[in-house]
Length: 346
Image 1 (tube, rainbow, N blue to C red):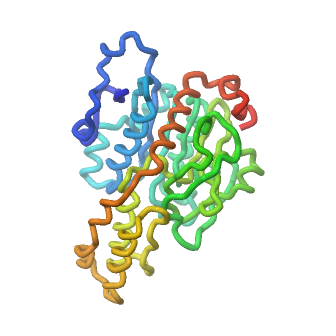
Image 2 (image 1 turned 60 degrees about the vertical axis):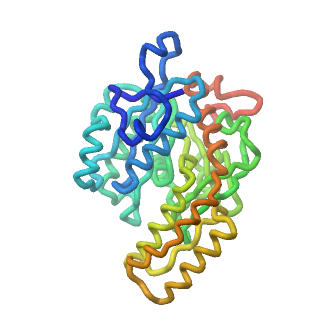
């Protein structure tokens, strides 16, 4: 099912990059009303449009016969260059528009942290306002990566903990509690991760969160809690990532190392590259020796992209498809069945 966009304001990269037709209102005259999904996209300029595409594709793949209307927003107080501001002005709604109506579902992305304490970020008060609004005006809210950390910090004072190295790659997560979101999913769910911090299962469960998926290597991924009217779903990982996203991030981190913006050479993403790609990337690293300088990136072995396989998109779409099903009947009874956790206990 193609996506429908507010006021038919479709970002050009999606309009030209997908074969799906636009959802013309006349084509769905007899269909159920569209699910209204807001996306608060807070990613930096360099990832702003890529993140749009990732979530658009995930929602489109999950939709099946569900018509989904997408409304785009972004936090104020994020540094933006002129090109990004023009994009936001062309395709995003003003955040003040959010306060005046209700959405079925809301997705809030992360962004790159600048401060050790999230409460010191310049956008903190605006993010808190969105989280409080979502508790009263959505049936369910998805918080991604840093937004998940911000959500539990604001709601329950749960801190995030720094990791010794970046949690980076594809990790298999076991379903550890039954829930409508993971119903029918495989026992082991592969998820992309890219983060320097984590929230921990024991601290989450002590504050009433239900951990739904967990990995012995990567820790918690999906966890949930009912907050007022809204079921909040938190992903530490990135089910929306596309096949080459981790490669792009790895290449970006190498460039930062070559520019002297980080002290250590970045670790490869786990479980992502095949043996040939791993050798090629190790040879590239060894060829650098102690030398630095961004010009070295010209020798990066771009051919490693040929062997990449997307092992997570099917399960990601399955979880979001279950989310759409919940949004159609967002009540404790709808979330309760033999293989689900009732909303009142989530």
